[in-house]
Image 1 (cartoon, rainbow, N blue to C red):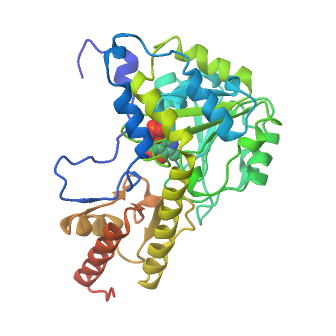
Image 2 (tube, rainbow, N blue to C red):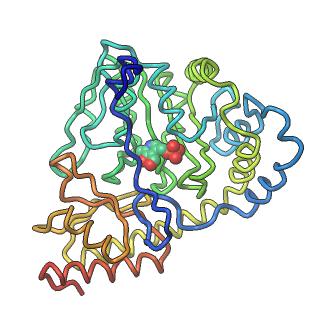
Length: 361
Ligand SMILES: Cc1ncc(COP(=O)(O)O)c(C=O)c1O
């Protein structure tokens, strides 16, 4: 705090990212990164983009990239797509472009914790709508929002997915406001709401290459929607920085999107590991939600989440524990790593349970 800070800076509560330890001695399954390398074609394209051409500014409108995304998503053209520096940036622009101070934005009480941060930054009112006891989101709870709706689908950190009929119910019940669907984990769920864009002028979808394309370090995301919504995002973006996506990122992202079969194959591997680890945890007595993302959300009845998280850390495994919310205090979010890493995780789990005086396997 300093007397030079303005009032807004004093008031904001910034997002706390998951821990990124410098030493690599941990099995790092705390930030939902993809355990497999990015597409070799993407890496090659990025190497090719490093040269004298960097003297020039990148393409501010990322046309080639947007065209590739539109093709991949089956959308009519680049006016349905906009790129950003990670989906976090697109989410921020969407909050700024579509939501209004004084008109409550609705989202779940347990969801991506960046949403209330954007509300704080942009002076927006919001209402956190409690998920049901089993973390299920009830679409009827979202009818008639005064300011807009934000849904992460699959949700984070619960991993639960709403099917498109329910997404459609929320869209239809909110014709006068924007419904922002954050599909950061959609590639692991087998479903996207992109097919609804044509029918719903109030739908905007945020996506990222961070997880599905193993490019968290590159910071590339995009949004999808009808042209008037995309144009709003463009206006906000061009009021901050015209060149948000650098030339190397544009080249790498283009090759990664064109190499869709590679990304799909890696996601399929992650899904198979997710199901194997879920079964292994259920066998040990854990409760697990039916996650459709690249992570599991788990608890061991009767053992505090903070204790398990700490016991795993002492065994060299980092998972994410959300201690602040009493509803999730005993739950852990476990990202899906490689099969070898997840076997180490299971060993650590067994060790931790034994230490607590429970069998393990
Ligand atoms: C629900 C959700 N949305 C968006 C993001 C942001 O992803 P990125 O900014 O890497 O695209 C995350 C990252 O963890 C997330 O969990």
